[in-house]
Image 1: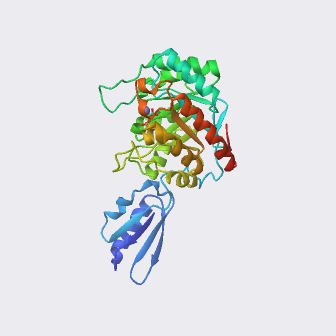
Image 2: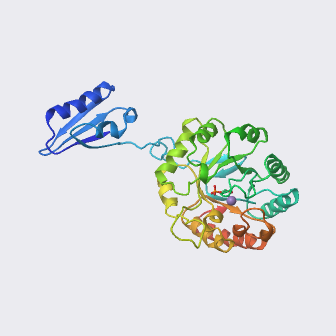
Image 3: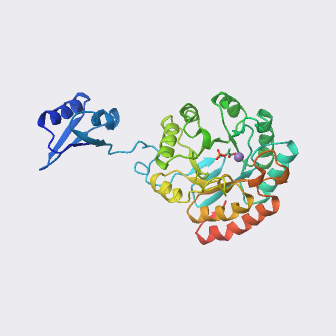
Amino acid sequence: MIIVMKHHAPDEYIQAVVDKIRAAGLSEHVSRGTERTIIGAVGDERVFSPDAFELMPGVERAMRVVKDYRIVSREVHPADSVVQVRGQAFGGQAIQIIAGPAAVETAEQMAQCAELVKAGACRLLRGGAFKPRTSPYAFPGIGVAGLEQLRQESRRHGLPMVSELLDVRMLETFLELDVDMIEIGARNMQNVGLLKEVGRINKPVILKRGPAATLTEWLMAAEHIAAGGNHNIIFCERGVRSFEPSYRNMLDLSSIPVLKRETHLPVIVDPSHAGGKAWMVSSLAKAAIAAGADGLMLDIHPDPANAWCDGEQALNPQAFRQLLDELAPLAAALGRSLA
Ligand code: PEP
Ligand code: MN
């Protein structure tokens, strides 16, 4: 912690800051300039928050030296981490594509989606069983039956499964059904209770970015998971709220290089929830890969016009196949490949 004293702060104010630092078991480093004194608190600064000093007389401001995220930061782990999901690696050379329906509807729809995913260069199957709908009257997902159908197709085709956990009370069920990767959705990015619980298990977690979360908040959310012992975390950018109504969210491509610099963990992008329109998905997906994303999560549907949830943004089979065909040479040009 660095504490900057006000212009010509008297010695007794400086001493009070020093006393507070010592009382917490840290030591001080006082640098007296001609106009201002700057005091460094040396030791584990986590015992203080900056306002503990900023509220003291004579203090202009206080700031942390180290970040509020450590385990997830590149500072402590410079090399890229590779997260394994039932044999599929995220964060390595290969670009991983997760695809499937926004919501599991019927056994037949799930089976059709799984076949499409299996036929393409996608190695993981998504499917929403519990949907966090904005309207309380919208279709909320078919619940446990949806997880069971997802699981059936996952195991039939050897595609690890991904599904969103909305409520900590369902965690046991997710574990019993052996969901391979747990998605924490945008609306729950700062649900600390949920983050802590998924931090205690050893299943990989996809942590989506909150619709208005800063990158630091997102990194700290990941740290909540990591602090419990689960370091198998994948960040998923899905766009943030903006002033522009012609797309659902504004895909923040800039977050990809920033995150790749700040954290060793893999970063993927969900262009479906960003654009919110199927016709945008291909452009956004390519831009994400070009910007350095380690993978994508795509909404697909055999018949988007009749989807029960998010049909507007779902790729139909033909558009899905075309996108995969176009992504392969792009990945190659970047020295990567589709998994
Ligand atoms: C989803 O992946 O189905 C979803 C609800 O996404 P988000 O949390 O990004 O809105
Ligand atoms: Mn959705």
